[in-house]
Length: 271
Image (cartoon, rainbow, N blue to C red; front, side, top):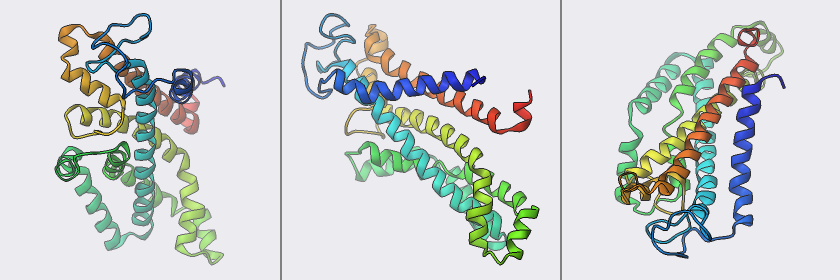
């Protein structure tokens, strides 16, 4: 409770989640329906104005925030699951299997996500948030996998692992019940970081036309603001709300990761 960074970051993230989940009930406006004039500035009836198609910006922001958070959670979950499996197997087994898995990780690490999405964009012109989240998740795991591998290689030489082997535990059981639980603090911290990266990646990819095309996300809102030349024309209500929420959430997630690292790391906790 004395960790102010943890409290601040958690409060901002919780408020953002509530904004996205509760907001659609408090402000039940369809973000895809034209309900006003084009490019109306914030005012009576439209708290955040309307976009180039006459759609309510606040309704889009509420729905887009939920979508972007969902993309971050799904992508981080997929990346973490793959990283745990590959990193744990590689670090515990060693040998040719270790070299093969790490070679595969290096290939994925060097392969830009944008190229994969460019290929997908050719064959899948309509891309849902789920599709984009899965693609980001399948390309975001190598860094975490390498870190988990390094920790597994260190932990498997500890005394408690030798005791488990003497008790007749199989390698799989040792990895699942002895090694992985000892890394969950680090994995959770990395999950938060990947979630932030995934949200930013979705926004960047969507803005250049290879991300989400179905539904509303913060990236989609920024895409339409870009197409409307909002910055040059002074249409601040088109880019400030989604950009502000994306920046706030991403910064809060990184702050949360720093606070968790300090909480779980005895050396940092002592400072």
